[in-house]
Amino acid sequence: MTLRNLLLFVFCLVGSSVVAQSKPNVIVFFADDLGYTDLNCFGGKQMSTPNLDKMASQGMRLTSFYASQAVCSASRSSLLTGCYNVRIGILGALGPGSKTCLNPEETTIAEMLKTAGYATAIFGKWHLGDRGAGLPLNHGFDRFHGLPYSNDMWPSHPTSKSYPALPMFNGNEVVDADVTAEDQRSLTKMATQNAISFIKQSKDKPFFVYMPFSMPHVPLFVSEEFENKTGRGLFHDVIAEVDSSVGRVLETLKAEGLSDNTLVWFTSDNGPWLSYGDHAGSAGPLREGKGTTWEGGVREPSIVYWPGKIAAGSSSDAISGTIDVLPTIAEITGAKLPERKIDGKSLWPLLNGTQSKSPHEAYYYYWNKELQAVRSGAWKLHFPHSYRSLKAGGGTGGTPANYIDKKCELELYNLDTDIGESTNVAEQNPAVVQQLQALAATMRTELGDSLNKVEGKENRPAGTLP
Image (cartoon, rainbow, N blue to C red):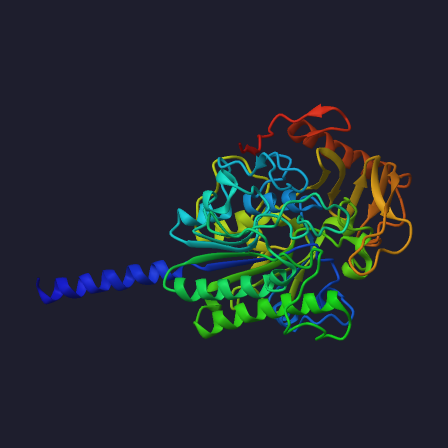
């Protein structure tokens, strides 16, 4: 080989390595049952969240960011596929032994990035199938360590003792068939350590890390290091440990020289489980919480951080949501979008400051298969539906209070001036009501509405397990 050809060969090798390494890494933190104001940077009172506050001060806060549905499995399916959960047939919270799972024919963020050469891992709570085809390794993840579903689905549940023992998985194998209370104290720390190890092992190629925390879902557990650390109770201690986890991962990125080439996204699956009172978070000015389509149930704190790419201290109140995470990641990584129809839109123009307008004409709020509300711009229209609420304060010490049923009529709210959805202005704005009703009618044709007995034309079935 001549010297010229040797130099060309070396240049090609180095060039290809630079191209491969230039693909941004992606980390998604997904808290469980975190309220809108459970972080200082989102108006929380005396919350111990210095790392997330710093992340917000150096990145962007999305202040009108929505989960697709205010319950575990449904919400997670949307984050990973870019679809309203109704489209892909995942409803509610899948229990142990459920025959329903995320359909392997759907494309997850992990599968999308794996085809683009990414190493992929999930550390924490999965909740989209507890065996066989339902497990993460069958949905694009190279590594999985964590729980198959919520940490309250065990024999020590405060209101039901019928659950089986809670298993811990490593890959497709159960490595602990009976997770104890002492084990649960290590859930956040374990996920953090696994994520840090994976980042260090995978730093020479692009990687995707998904960290769906089990906390602050009840029952609340915290490691010895954070027990009584805040002096403000167990819930505050749990949030402090989640915040520390985020900080440790960000410090690892910095130490490994990866910060400038890593997109980091933090949000939650739904709002606070208010019936648990002092073991639940707060939605602050927002109405209601988990299990409802009021803002407190589905509007989530969301922070996106990428030094040099996203302006420090920026914010956007444009409508966005977990359905947008997949297409945003696709745009920044150059990965190919799923062939099946998705509902999300790329938020990259919002994040990089080239656009301020939401990519969504409207956002749709389903509970199970019932279309309960629609938002366009500042306006949100609720259709008549029942919802759960608390008659008084929540429970104490991990025991929940009872909900009562309430009824919502046709109600219109201007979220710019009435974020708490307290003043119905439907009668004063008939044209707005009519416009939102028309948008809803279009969505009913596509995804259906069980209350109106309209079958969607573009729904797809969930996966099934034996």
